[in-house]
Length: 413
Ligand SMILES: Cc1ncc(COP(=O)(O)O)c(C=O)c1O
Image (cartoon, rainbow, N blue to C red; front, side):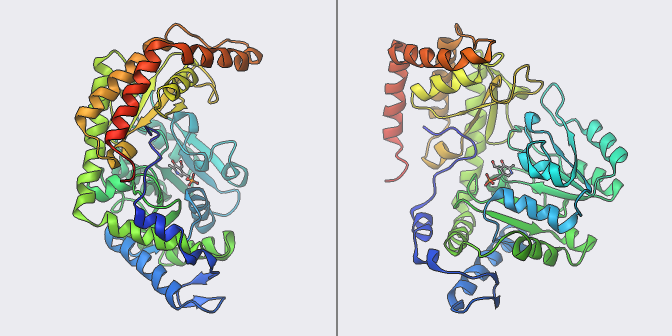
């Protein structure tokens, strides 16, 4: 059972497009302006993908060629900044993505990255964002995250970005499907640029897109062309045409009325799961969720123990930092959970209640364990811990229940 919020299960039509002969083709350039021959159908496919995205999001300019979310983000820097310019983004331990200027990312090597944070209660610290923006005058501000459970205040960020003349880029990788479904406010009226992966709540192939809004073109009429140039030839070579076709399929699927119901169900399921976890004594960052994701506090450094114990019952999650985490990002104090994949399989609130109870029971099993404080003792400790889990009767019982539920909701029929 897949509860990693960035993962999903694609349709057979998308698998078919990804496995198609389009993988054999080279097509550097853009539709009707290529560096290779034989593009009659490739041009049609890329035109269709771009047109579908424009229509679905209500934006005038789209690039569907980024190989994934990280290259899409790098292209935004290349399009609007010069090396050394100041940029701002949400810090990684506070839920931001590596590519928003975290110290381990090339984005902080090539640009002067200032990081903003969440407050102790888990909500974005808007006062700090405004103070840092006024102090550092960034050229580019990112809004969007990898581990943030509340609605992004796009309008408030836009006021701050406009005040200091910065470009505002929304990275909606996690919430794209929710935005399309009307289950999360759209950034389109407020930001200049939008980036997204195509494989999370959008339920498409692994890939990326960059969109320029009407507001973006008003700030710089050449912004679309600058984004295109940043992707090719600045950063990438030939687009992955089989992925472009699969993105076109995903966008068609997302335009169907069922997708609106799907996106709303993802959020209803997350709220139901959050409620059940809280009812069973679990602690969630911000005490709940507005989107598809929850962050659960496990106690100092215990994220890895709960991740492993849930693995033992057949539930996949990832360990994650929580606000003001007393431990390190590699041994953080929380886990991250999400509902996109189980919603795709057709599970609803009733199943969320069962899953919430199982997670709480697994948490009670690991409560008696603590990660050693000496780093060199951790590997041996985890090995023993896994052996203990294998013998635990409660773990075995829950594993059987998880398997039975998964059989009732197959990923593919
Ligand atoms: C907010 C956000 N942006 C960008 C990315 C990067 O996407 P990819 O892993 O496809 O490069 C992710 C991936 O988790 C993400 O969560």
